[in-house]
Amino acid sequence: MNTAINNRHNRVRQSSGDRVFDFVVTLIGVLIMLIVLIPLIFVLSASFSDPDLVLRGKVLLIPKGITFRAYTLVFENRDIWIGYRNTVFYTVAGTAINILLTIMAAYPLSRKEMTGRRFFTLVVLFTMYFNGGLIPTYLLVRNLGMYNTAWAILIPSAISTYNLIVAKSFFEQSIPQELYESARLDGCGSLRTLISIVLPLSKAILAVLVLYYGVAHWNAYFNSLIYLRDTSKHPLQVVLRNILLLGQTEQMGSNDVGMGEKIKMVEAIKYSVIVVSSVPILLLYPLAQRYFVSGVMIGAVKG
Image (cartoon, rainbow, N blue to C red; front, side):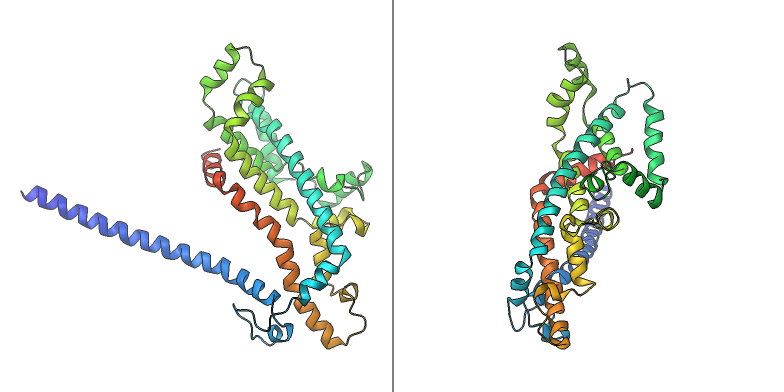
């Protein structure tokens, strides 16, 4: 009787601890969500608000003096549309190259029968910690004839070592060895096994890689500043940098206004271009969310 009572108290005590744990985790999650969400709401509200009210700190989370003038100026700017076109091209083409080369490298490194697998894995890991640096990379890009071309954006970042290791771990741990043996008995070569068996079972990790690479390409601007001379080849992020940091309101048709009005226009444009540049990549997350968590967790289990 006493044992049953003690077991009951233990269950109650454990249940109370679980509730406290769940509350703490939920509270931390809500705080993190607010930390991320509040700045996004402020930027969105400020982009639709009167820039004078924004400058005076009157706008917090609710738009005031709603106006679409900033978005009108942004969408009338030809450079932004050219930047959009270039960024979409760099993102799509770059991600396709990234996925192709990452899979081609990760799959053989995950196969135990590959000769020298450990050596090549160590070589790949070495590049995570040591690289040639900016100047040798610049000289290499220039000597290969890629300077001021799209290849200077696509090739130097063709493979991320971290993503390669994640994909390799996924192939090692998530694809049963029996499937490889069955494919071999059916006469499948390595390429046929990869295309017909491995890739259809790797949707989770492929979604994660597409998201990682896609976001990196969409937000990239440093390589463009270094390797691209023509402004017609600049991605959206460089165009926005020129607008935000250099205050190029002359490109927005503001030559005939005073300095005070220019400051207000820059303030209005600043938030609208952030929204315009962020919305497309934010739309990618819901599409990849189905596979994102499982892909990250499976690929993150002991490399």
